[in-house]
Image (cartoon, rainbow, N blue to C red):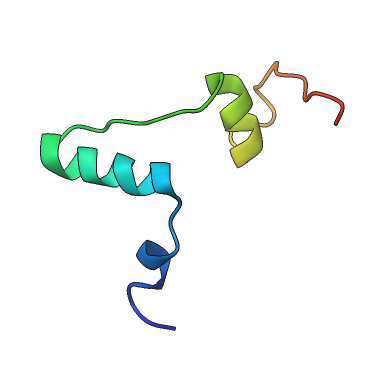
Length: 56
């Protein structure tokens, strides 16, 4: 697997987020939706989250 495989297959917003972080030298994050929902989708803080997934 090529070393830059991960970077070649990032989504649009992930690429823009990386560009902003490199330019500003700040940890900026672009979230499309509620933080708790995004954390749930990414599998973060599953025990601590009070977010209930929508039934779809």
